[in-house]
Image 1 (spheres, rainbow, N blue to C red):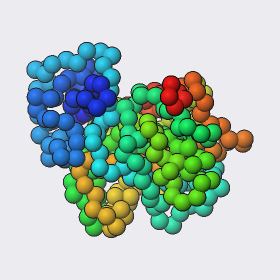
Image 2: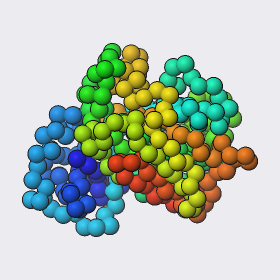
Image 3: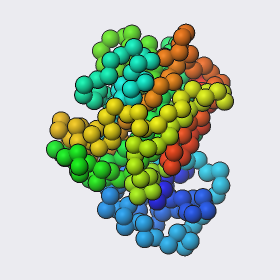
Image 4: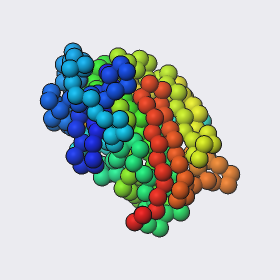
Length: 282
């Protein structure tokens, strides 16, 4: 199934997409999709719902991030072979882990806001994982059973803040609206093999990224198992799994986002996003 959250920012309600593409309101069956309610078991129970009996949500209603009130937003860097090469980095021997502040999370079609002083804001289409079971020291063979679902993520990044200001990458990854998530949280049975999904991203209609999760250095199961050795992953935790080649930083000369640009991206089976770039305070 395809689960989602809809409504004004900060007041989203839970919903799902029916077979006709109509959003149905699930708020009578679950309070919201948050760490307190989002689990593999809960989503499995909701699969038996008679969607035709639920209220239709009017077309054009805002879609929010598919996970609400997330506690953790993790990410993996340099996880596509061709992306590592375009940024002149060697392929890492182990997954490169970092975090994004959860305050950056926004809806899939909300604007990208250029932070004050930004000169190098960049795009990154990514496959997102949402954890659905407590996950600690999990073997790779069992890792995918801990996934509640997958989603599309744009890991928006300010490269000057990330690379040129010292310290951790989180500074360049966490500005408001630097984490568009969704539109949908898609259950694993509808996704199939997470290592066989196309990813694309365009800016102002020009295709920048066009790749597949098959180019990942560390696959989804490896990432989950590896992370679970160092931390306890919890239901509702979000993991962005890395971006393929075609980021602005990789061009010669580099190309970065400017006010008025339109970014469109998608991951196969997980839905599309569309963001207009605005200046801070616009």
